Length: 196
Image (spheres, helix red, strand yellow):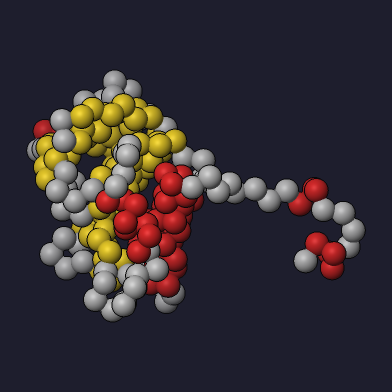
């Protein structure tokens, strides 16, 4: 993320964890950045070349994501995927409540003969459209990862690793799968032994 100097006054808050010079290893994922940005109308992240994969989730408001000269209007609940080497820009809409979470990463092949995310990586290389409406509550692992980063403790690495993996798998399911998050316990009858 590269906001302009004038954009700083249009920020409400920005919790940015940037590791571009020294990415953090979370098993088969190299984390380059993760954060939460809330801004007023007219905020712009200037055009730049995308260095890694980036998944963004629009928590509130509306705006535009520009990718390789294509404009995508985004609003609350949208998930956006950016791929490496893409030319990328973000603008908030006319509302004063544009807020989004983001994670920038690359797949780490150095310690794995085959990454557990091999299929996800291949699918991201052939993305047909970069924006989809969330249907699996990807905001939950985003918020949990951000809480762990803000309040690190003994098991934060384990928890952050888990949440990053959840973000990737849920994004994959939203974009490339018909998997639904359905568990209706009311459909079960009988004892707990029968349910299990």
